Image 1 (tube, rainbow, N blue to C red):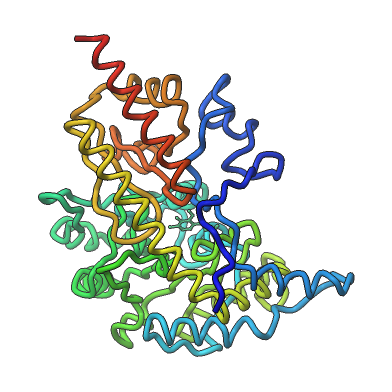
Image 2: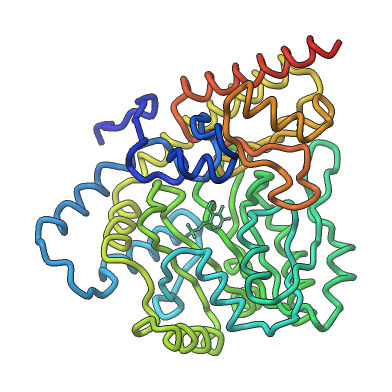
Length: 405
Ligand SMILES: Cc1ncc(COP(=O)(O)O)c(C=O)c1O
């Protein structure tokens, strides 16, 4: 296939109502006067999606009738074939419920499978909308904090064992691969995690939205593919949105091998107004199917590009800012950086990054208390942009250190 993409291309996203780039959003999140920060926060990419996606949508667009629509039938075999080829997981079409995004789906599942006051396990620091879904619905977050062992984040299984025994714990949300710490959980880690949850009757929600973004040398295992028991006691959330940069299309799916669980959620979603428990948009399934079927080469190239971006960032920050630690990125395009030794005061760190370096990053404490002093840097942008951001970070921190010495 002829390569028709160029990840180095700078594309102006301002004025496209991009959440990541709109000054109005930046000012609401980072504060007044910070609307022009260089945004490396929200998890979408500053790259064009594969051309096949645009072609497929244009074909449907040309029809000029966008009436009530079913999920494009091409979506299901495309998704099933993708998971079979890339992840060795055989999905049955009957297990799939489509949803308009994973975050809304986590809200529906919380409402459907737990009761007010129940406790839900989260492995902090973790993608912050998980905690919001729990709290918005009057449930309680029970943290099973990740541990740093040497240079690596690990799950704390003895803490999990203890907490899982509480009968008020009814659900655990797993982030696999993990946003923000960048771990691709090993099969062994997943087995131990799932065994503890299942032994204690805890339903596992496995959010695998980042599962296609695996850096060289690592391998993702879909939790339900490990055993029938894991499949029957878990619900896996998947989407082509991170993989191919389609988040604005709001398309995702839940894979629910257990018939009773699936029926329960399907009728719950029907009560919420989803027709035939189908959630999604007209274009989401069309775009996802095209990408799954025809954009594998684009993805392989993207992964190599992201890997080089990561190596650049790690080398730049660690060599020029002694004490800064960039955790090894195994999956996702979100680098997790520890600034605690270099700039221990968090408000100073944020001020230096935003007022001096003029970059907008996800602050670690948003992901949980144990994220304080860390920053999450989205590296899915042209290398020249990442270089500009990294150099600005280095320069502003050095300037600050020179001033206080
Ligand atoms: C772990 C995780 N889950 C879900 C989402 C968002 O999913 P959606 O856009 O389908 O709601 C993100 C986006 O960053 C994410 O990192």
